[in-house]
Image (tube, rainbow, N blue to C red; front, side):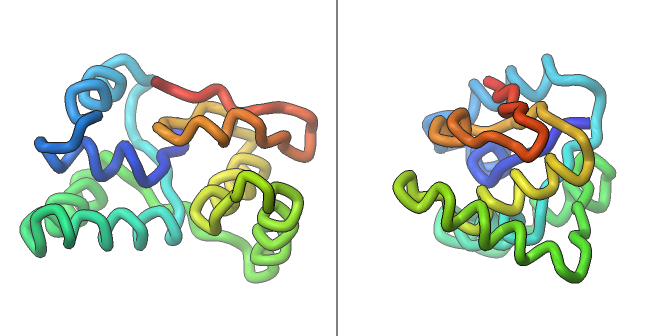
Length: 136
């Protein structure tokens, strides 16, 4: 299982994205699917894909879910508190809600591998002292 940030979700679909081929190549080298993402990352990707190509590109992302390439991590009811802690702790980066949701999901799932183009996430330290293993 690999956690997946917004950037690769957009780049895999938007063939005009600067990182498209790099993300396609990285996906091929990752452990077998599924990728796991969070609601904030999915929402952010849908917004960016709307700007990149409208509803057809958004529907491709829905297709990732329908085809099992992507699964949605569902947080616990009180998990928002951990997101808030991450955002406060890393406010100088800044760490946005999508990034914080990935860090919280990583803690809950015990997963360090992250498919992301977001370099500041390398500085995030999870509760057990681990950092992300970021690809590419």
